[in-house]
Structure formats: C-alpha cells, structure tokens
Image 1: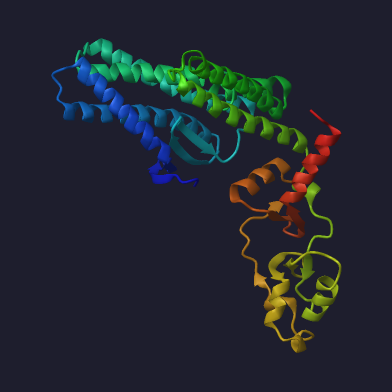
Image 2 (image 1 turned 60 degrees about the vertical axis):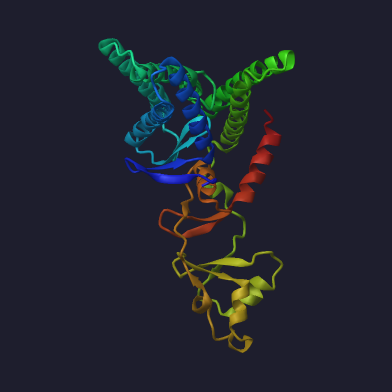
Length: 374
C-alpha cells in the first residue's frame, strides 16, 4: 500500500512503516546520540549511538501508542481499523468508516491526545520519583516532553489533526450535519497550514537560514490533507440523503440467462449501446454471473441458436454488492477502498436492480454543485 512495508499486527491491526520513517529514525538517532555524548562525556561513541537508537524507538513507540488510542476506541464502536502506518510526520490510523454520532467521533479523536498525556504524566512521575541523573534520566525527560508536545500539537483545532476532528464533532453536534463540521475544521486546518508555511519561510527569506524549514514541511502537509478533507466535506454535502438506488444507471446492462446467444447478440450487441459486459440474472432476478461480448467468440455462430447465455457466462464471483437503500456516501467510500469503477445494486430480497457506476456519481456531484454552488 503506497510503498509501505508491513511489519506485523498490533491487536489484530495491520502495522505498516513508510520508507520515510527510516530517514527520521536515522536523523533522531544521530541527533540524540550526539546530544547524549555531549551531555555525558563518559559515554563512548558506540553506547551513545545505541542509546540514541533506543530513544528514537521509544519516541516512535509513543506515536504508535497515540494511534492505538484512536484505534481501540474505534474498535469498541464497531469500526474496523484497516491499518496503522508510521511515516515522516508521525503516525496514521486508517479507519474503515467514521463514527455514527458526533459524541462517538469526539471520543475517537480525543483518545490519542489522552494517551500521549498519560505517557507524559507517567514519564514525569517516574523522573520525579527516582531523580535519575544519568543518560536514562535524560531519555525519560525527553520522552515526557515529546509526548506533551505530541498531545498539544495534535489538539490544534484544524483537520487533519485530532483537534480538527474534535472541532468537526462539535460543529456536527451543533448543526446536526457532519459535512459542515468537516468543511469548517478543514478551513481552520488550512489556516494553520499557511501560518506554518510562512513561519518556516520567513527566516529563509530574511536571513537565508533554513532554521524553520521543518515548519514549512508541516505546513504543506496540513494544507494538502486539510484540502482533501474539505473536498470530501463538499462531496458529503452533495450526496447527503441519496442512496445507491438513486444513481443506478438507466437501462443497465442486464440480460436473462435464458436468452440464446443469437437473441443476446441481436438484442444487445447489435443494438446501439456501448456496453461490452453484461450482468446475468436467473428467472427470479437474482444475479448469477456475467457475460462479455468477447465471450461470444468462443462459440461458433452456427451454435448460437441452441446455446444459452447461462452456458457460457462466467459464474458470479462478485463478493461486493450494495443494497439499493444504502447511503450513497458509504458506497463512494466502498468504491474508493476497493478501487472499483462500478457495483451491482440489489434489493433487500437479492433481486438485481442495476449497475452503479463511479462516473455517474461524479457527474451527479458536478450537476448538484452547479445547482448549489458553495
């Protein structure tokens, strides 16, 4: 998935590492090993390097714990956690779907910062209780300060940060409309992104210094992800209240399994349409397979009048169908997750209604956006 490396599972959650993480791991190890060597001259270079690596791993373990906080609360709400990924800017828990209520969304969002604050308090308490004045004490102090910074940074009220998700939940609670929370929190996230970019570039413009370059990278990260969230919020607004059945393609490519190949060719292939693949149904209207125009080439034309569609169709192997009353927004997320361009739509009794195409949803969003511009 996007060049990431799977390294195992955490409580059943797939755990990935992005290649950019190794760069940060190396930089933190090198930087802090040098700091420890300067602070404690008795350390030899090899031991300082080992302690620097240990520090880096503990810092990233804190990030993993932060993401597990989000993940475990989501799991308690019945939401599947698809993965946790470590990358250059920290970590990301990928959830199957959003919470169903603003209160649930709030608790998923706040769980990560709470875990970081607990780690901060724990490391601080151990430091005070033991008064460790050694490399171990220095590592403990760093661990405490980093977890405090991780909690406070993530509480900035703008998407994609946890504070943005908290703000989104609050706006959702007040307005009763989740997309309004997404758009509002995304705008705030973009504002903070521009502030970070400007703050990072000012020393470069004025003094020619790269002192704050990291803030520029964080700013662009916020701008990109907040922009994507805002776009998703606008999509939510356009699709609210619609179901899969509302976007079923008119005259969907559906044929009866009882048709002969000659009837199929005359009625569908020769007719003026662009379909090259058709869904096949039985006498009860249930989806049982699919047939493509090219499949006709495997049967001599002389046999078309005595060969039925069911004889050459490909049996139904589609593991994914959607019911016609399923919210269209969930269908969009399903199409994106499984990288599909279309889905069969069925009624509650399993009868095939038609096909839903991703392109038709895009056209619907464009039409509704033109009628209701932001």
